[in-house]
Length: 272
Ligand SMILES: [Zn+2]
Image (cartoon, rainbow, N blue to C red; front, side):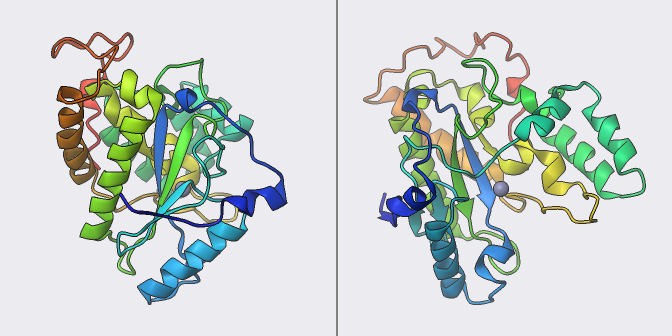
């Protein structure tokens, strides 16, 4: 995989970001780069340049970005935490309530985005009660979701779709991450995969989609990504990895799901 490394030093001017152990990373979060980042241009080369410039010069940003041509850029080292996804105490507490749906339903009673969030989320994660259930249990729960995750931004096309080159590049990057991050390489479990590689909207659906007091939602994120393609590509490669050179400690013997508390995993197959 060819990665274009940009400017790792960009975080330094805002203070060195926290270090972490690579073994603590359990989740990859895929994002859709907002139109605002690249100033709404119709030109995909300019969109890519603008996004690179933005992520190179701001504290906020992902570890990786993939443009519509399939070029992969890296902004932050994996052993640094990147600022791409934060619940905040309020958000985390909200999702821990059993009635997070009805809570927001009341808040947004007259705003149709509300019902859209819940029906979409329930279709995507059948059997799970809350976004907090998606997180693979390890080291307690991830109040600081960023500490536990790798962020990947995808620049959408103007028509809000992703290109074949992007799917290919994302697949290569995910395979690379799965074989280089200790958790994925050693505790890898086929049924955990769909919960370990997720979208921003899966982990934090309300702020992505629901309308806030100002009447503005952040938009679906990564929205138009076709997860079946992503996971299909990845599954094939991971099977090769599992049967190949890597010794997968902790992987189950057969099809039986031996992972505690994950009886719902087989249902959450990531269909977008
Ligand atoms: Zn996002």
